[in-house]
Length: 252
Image 1 (cartoon, one colour):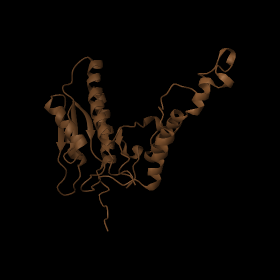
Image 2 (spheres, one colour):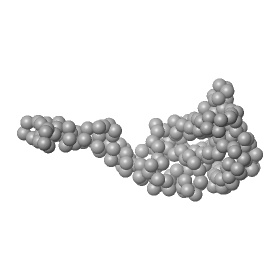
Image 3 (tube, helix red, strand yellow):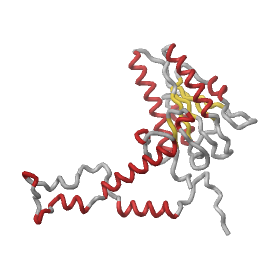
């Protein structure tokens, strides 16, 4: 008998999940951003139906509710995810996966830093990012590439050989005047070590207050919680982060 034990890589879909996906593919395949409101396209002057037997385009819209159904499903999923992680529905951004989400955070933080330089009217140098040396490739590789292109600088903080954690004092010691982002995973995908993100966020809030008084840019905090969601408590308010990455395929 074969037993699958690599749920940190991905999990097999539960039967009810597979059924929900199948239902969505067959019943909600429409464009959720469609601009075809039911009951409006086929209306003639004075509100009369333009089509034969009172149907026309409005009848077609009612016959193809797939876009509306897709929008409802996305909205429901957004609200469910928000409740799961203690966020607001409008804060949830869907991407194709964790890699895209992590890349989006990196490039957003970098762009935010550069746009801030235009506002204050003077340069602060190249954007600097602090992360650990045990991050997922979706963090490490884009940061290395940005470094090769001269678009960002990165400090890879070594985790403690004793605890396996990225210690808060070590992370804070790596911060520079031009630091724009600190990205530390919540739980490591190989060791299972849980990083001290709540403590880091608290210390970062105090640091950002001092930086504001000195005219330095605010440092954003991100945690990749892909390995924690579904296995432990994940709440953005308790973690105190600006950005949180989670993925669906690692949750049973």
